[in-house]
Image (cartoon, rainbow, N blue to C red; front, top):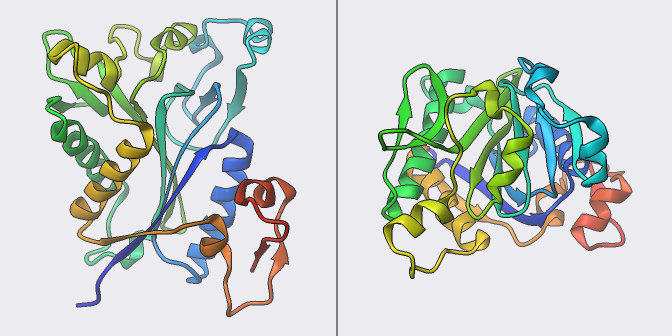
Length: 262
């Protein structure tokens, strides 16, 4: 049996529009078979995104107020409703070819595996979480369950994009600007808040440490080896093809003068 490999790239803080461009590029390369399964791990500046099922009524704050706070607003093609991304939140974009799994993996199974990955990552730190029937995401086990991670994906020709948002040390006040995922009667929480309840003196892992933990659990759940890449350049270069120049935003993100995309 051929060993399955997941390329992992930790990008730090990336603005949402640049991350969208990068996802499109990686999706195209995965569809063409030029690179394999890829997991992008990053953090966004403050931004509110709307999925395909979202309605503007679930954004409580006005556009003028959001603009005054420097919070961007994006409509996307992912599933789900409204969510917030911002500092202290680990965002993951697994761009996988579901046709390569035997048997071929479906959308629901893929989402359940992402949930399992995040449940294990919380469990590694002693925070017990769960699924809730009928609701996507990861929730605390409590009398009043709170959402610690949101999930919304898009699939095109069996290749996935978008992914999850895991609240590590996120300022939860931002979620008051929206009705998170369109669910008004359930609160949102963070790993920092849950760990403080267990032990107020316990040190919270950094976002980089959480990225490593989550990537390891991706490997375990998807039964794959995780291959950490040192740079965006090492992912995007495709020696088989005549390269084309990447957008300036991606070259700046890579810290290189010249990055070429096949």
